[in-house]
Length: 193
Image (cartoon, rainbow, N blue to C red; front, side):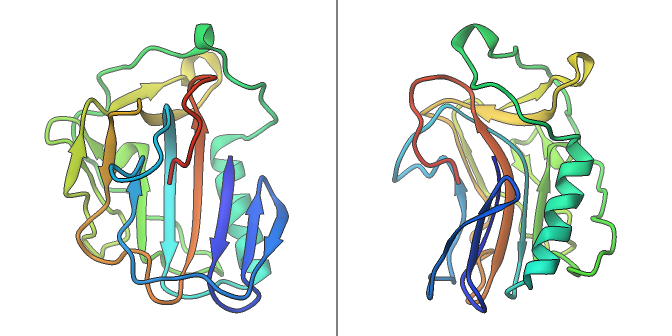
C-alpha cells in the first residue's frame, strides 16, 4: 500500500495514488511506531516511511507518490498468501546513508528506508539529517530482499515485532506522511503504521 496522509490544508488521505478520503482535522505532535506495541497488531512489511513538518500540496503529494512508485517499480500485486511469504535475509547489516533527492516537495522531516536499517544494532536510521533514529525495536525485525525475483526490499515482522521511530515527535504538529507497506499474511491484518 502506497499511503500518503496529512492533517492540514486540504487534508488528503491517498492510497495507491487515489484520494480515498478528505478530512478537516488530524492530530500531530506524535511519535510513530511500526506495529505499535500498544495497539493493533499485524504481520507486516515496510519498505519506506517519509514525513514532512508541513502539509504538502496535492501536486507535491503526487510527486512524492511518483518518486516512491518509480523507486519501487510499483505495479498491482495479488494479495499475499502464507505460502508466498519470502524468507528473511541478513542484509543490510550496517547503515550507509543515502539522502532523498531534492524534489519540489522539499526536504523530509524524517525518512526511513530499507537501506537505513542496521541489523547489528536494531536501529532504523533517519536519513533526513534530523537524527530521528529509531530507539526501540522489539522482537525479530527482518530485512527481506525480494529483488532477485523482481520484488521489493523491506523490513518485516510479525505481531510481536515493532519499531518505534525516535522519542521525538516525527509526526509534527502539521504534517504529511507517505509510506509503502504491506501485509505479509492473510491473518493479523490491522494497522501497520
